[in-house]
Image: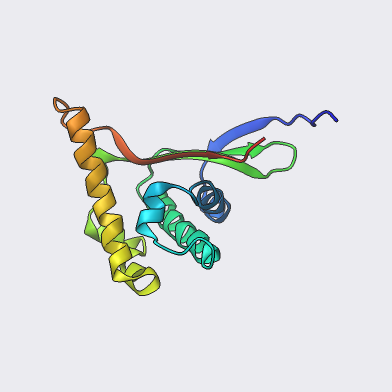
Length: 154
């Protein structure tokens, strides 16, 4: 049976898109090694919690993207209005400091997901910076980090 075609339009991310886009990202990154390291749950008995932790983190990240007006776009099915994907990044030149992270709601991370999880999240970010510096030793800094591109399959 042939699939119905749809036109995809791209537009800037809006505050009203955060929930659905965070859901898409959480689903896409559920089996990601880095996120599994940060949020160490038993996949069999706590899969819902693992999804919830990823969604919670993506909601905070997208809040930062909106607050700092970083590049962020969603892909929308023109006929249904459904958000089917998107892309965003956090620019390193204006990466939020501790106050920006607190304003985004990350101060409650230890209370929701544990102190160890919060430390692992920070260590992953530092580890990516270290890897990046080893790959590009003559570069002052990469342009962006925390980038994601996520689309529904099909």
